[in-house]
Length: 78
Image (cartoon, rainbow, N blue to C red; front, side, top):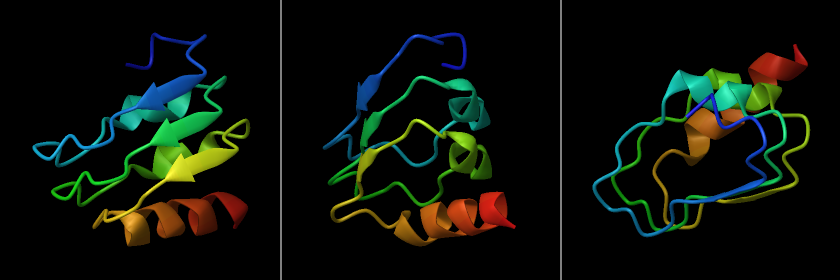
């Protein structure tokens, strides 16, 4: 997915079989919106997502991966 450099919005909401995201997500430098709401089996978001400086909107409603996303942000700020 990292090859999609111009991707600005990614909607994976309600993908209940999704468990992890690839680390190449961090290469989506133009990504502004990421929708992962109701991905109830998603347990991990890669730390590379913390490098997405253009990311303005993220939906993690009912998503178990909320804590891993928070850790990715803290890692990037450190």
